[in-house]
Length: 453
Image 1 (spheres, rainbow, N blue to C red):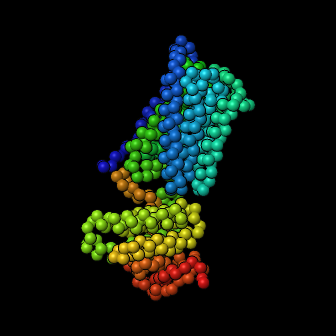
Image 2: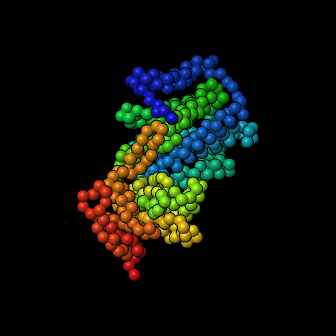
Image 3: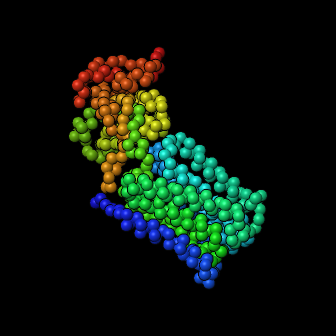
């Protein structure tokens, strides 16, 4: 797929800003000229419009949330929480449509939209800050879902303060007080994202800026509009437009690392102390020459089906890549595994145990050899549209690969840096080994057990 280049100029930014401000101009016009603020009450149209907006926001919340937790990026995590806030409360607002699911108006469901948009503005603002770490991400997401469930329950049961059957058509003091900080937070978030965009222009960042501006404008329209009037329909369309813009930006991105343009600097050019595990099958080339490709494929799938879960699910490794028979796994890539050497060592031994069971059933199959090394590496995003990958590079990675190549079949070999982080491990020296690219030999050890007998 050819790479697409986008050229950004100050004139383009100015034109984009002008287009984004047009909805506010239109709102001011219809408020000044009430005859233009025509009334159109159509309940099914309202229900499906809001439900579609909520569905788009929910999809974005899921995809950005998965990317955030996979890459350990706090900015994308806060973006996902903003989408989740909007999605959940908009879904509740759709239920407020009279004569669709409810017979009478419900204050809780009606107020869900301003509350959801306001809460989303907080997360949008936080996403523009340089906050690191996502260890709390899942708990925060669960807390947000619990809040939505409690709001829904209080609305259905008409508990205080959501016990009223209707809300004023025109914003009262509470809604106005809610709108002011909401618009301000969206404005700050958009301005900070614009500064990031100016340093490294991308369509994804521009989509997010536009979405924040439109959501801020939707809050203004929401507060001042009259129910079922043209201005009232406007804020519904503004919210839908905001999420459509982001979806369009996501769709245009290459499918690998779709949200890479939102990643924080530490995610795309950070340094980590981590452990790297390499594994491949000794004698794989000879086996491939002597067997049909379908048999080779069956052999690899049989092995990977048992060894990958051991590495990933049980010990928290991240599979960086699988190339043929070779497997590269990282530990502490997100910076949340201080015991990365212990995890890598346990994963290596567990991999060999699982592979030994398969090899016992197929004596003619090649055996895995595993190499592990620990140290500082650069966490980076490599490539561009048409092929991008989030990986680690550096001498630590190179040495891990070389150590794996020196490991006897069926064993786990570790370097001196990993051994130093495992003081209780039982090892035996494989002697000084000359590694390609190293001027001095490196002492390599066979890992026997993680605890001394």
